[in-house]
Amino acid sequence: MVSTHAELQRFEQPAKTDGKLSFLVLGDWGRRGDFNQSEVAHQMGRIGEKLDVDFVVSTGDNFYDDGLTGEQDKAFEESFTQIYTAKSLQKQWYSVLGNHDYRGNAEAQLSLHLRKIDSRWLCLRSFIVNAELAEIFFVDTTPFVKSYFTDAKGHTYDWRGIGNPRAYIANMIKDLKLALRESSAKWKIVVGHHSIRSIGHHGDTKELVSKLLPILKANNVDFYMNGHDHCLEHISDTESPLQFLTSGAGSKAWRGDIKEQKTEGLKFFYDGQGFMSVQLTRSAAEMAFYDVSGNVLHRWNSTKLLYSSI
Image (cartoon, rainbow, N blue to C red):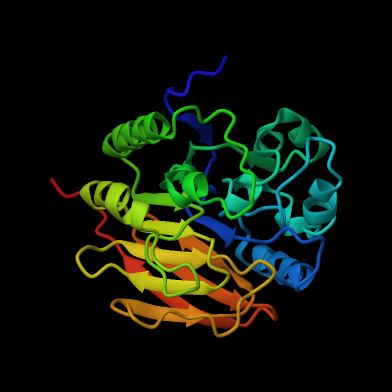
């Protein structure tokens, strides 16, 4: 019996000796190499080597169309192990579940068995990675979205381990609030599958705007990173330093699928395939978005005072 309420599990990810931290962010990818997944993987390997990345973050929808059927599903190796073969990508992968993952056997992706097949794989519902310079808070956003429970559109979701969704969300928010409040990391990053702000196909996720966004702002979170919309995107919050970064272009992209009505704070939008890199030092952050050929489409820099505000 697993309690639905437990302090978020923590994983230690040591920074480099030079005090720098770098990682790649990829979302919405697992299609056995199709829809340019293999090409994106190749460029990730090239950029990963150039930046000497410490790890990779997956923003969910790891296996299409309906997650994994179980721990023995060959899609795990065919869409992950056999695709991301570059030497620079043989690092820890930290993953959250997306809504498509919940349409299969969600528990399978969380299992230790997959880690035995490929030790890079680490996927949990919600957890924290302490990377010294940064703390990264991974949040299970799918249970927030009411329509998956009330209007599943013929899909079946694997809600085992969730129990009462309202209690599950309340407990998760409580744990996240506490962890963010106690964090002394120079950079605070939250990762979830669903967007808070997006002009892509799905647009803003209203449940996250009401329940998650106020917590991020109140606790001085620097970046919220997500997938879900199959695009690359950067939106600055208009009322705080928070940046919304979408990296959901790991394979199939949605050309021309744009919601034009909310463009406040929009810095960049690309409706093709690609991925994102993050480089951090104690005083500076640099994000870059790359297309399927490895070209830099958008680069953004931020600096931070070396002393903490009192």
